[in-house]
Image 1 (cartoon, rainbow, N blue to C red):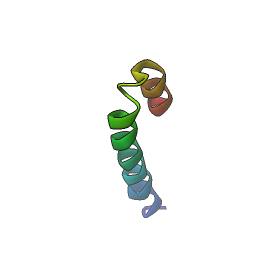
Image 2: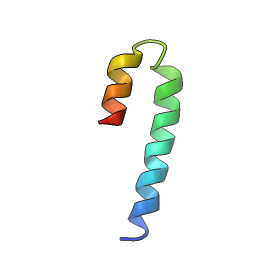
Image 3: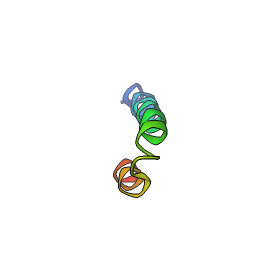
Length: 37
């Protein structure tokens, strides 16, 4: 369980970076909402 915690954080960070950089300019509101949710 302790291994899954950092894994999830890493996944969120890895997904947040490209999504923010690639999709933010295209559609920041819906994309950021989806990532946040």
